[in-house]
Image 1 (cartoon, one colour):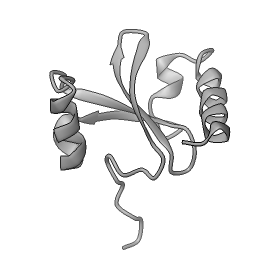
Image 2: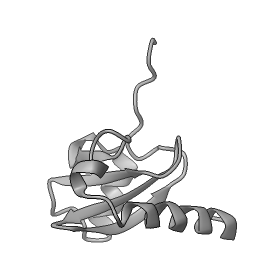
Image 3: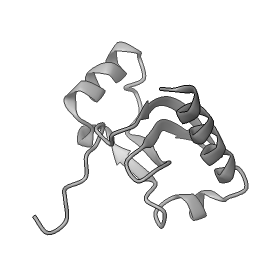
Length: 96
């Protein structure tokens, strides 16, 4: 991640601070994802870092493709990693 990408991500994360989870979850492309829907590499990494004990992870849409992944704990998102190319849980392309 470049320093400019870091600034952009942090700026976008700052915009979420004034929003409720109801405003964040869904309409803008951010949503929960079950463990089993993540790609194998991501599931293996969660096991490796001992973060595989929850049923659902949260994909926070930062850019068209970029996502911040974390674990939602009540009103807080505990950030796990940055997914710049939407590879942790790719969406099927429309009309294919």
